[in-house]
Length: 251
Image (cartoon, rainbow, N blue to C red; front, side, top):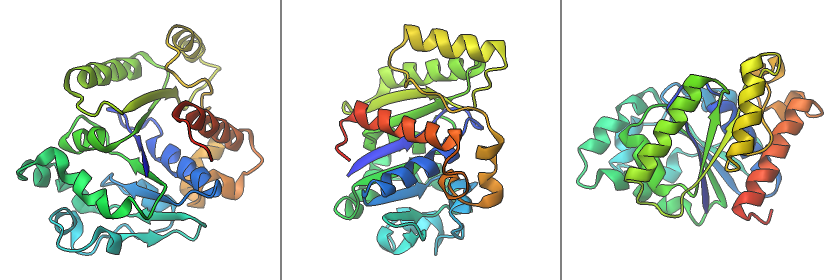
């Protein structure tokens, strides 16, 4: 099972729309895919029309009082399941800090899932937390959406410095890309062009700022459900193709 984590220290950069759409593309490829909504806000669960509730809450889940597979829900999309969020996810940090091995909590959780799924997508809450450190330890690919602004780049640099200093997972591949790009704004044009030219680690195709993407919240569906032939849908397909190329995915 390959694990893709969609993460940024900052909020509001499009992590959830990215997680939902990429997991749908993974499933459409024929890969058995699980999307785990780790954010207490439950945005991914909402988009997928799954009730944001885990029986017993995240505390019982992390304490392994029941099997993680019992919390998995079907989404109605072939090959795509969801492990929904719960408001109790806000306590995950506290629960992890009280474990003997706090950085191995999520690793133990995903063990039963490894044989059931080809791809696991993690929709992560913002901030550098114990949850984030758990994610860094289990992920194969860290997808980092950034808005092309100074503060967003500053947050990305802070993340890179943290990973250089603290990362123990040597297989983790970091793939940043620009999201919510508005090319009518001079700073967006300059940043997207200059940063990609100087830093080839950035994925080539940005995701534009669009009302069609924002409509996911109204439609409660991936963009491919209601705007499959749109430029925005194609931009996510292009992004997923490049991610697969960079990570040597066959499908």
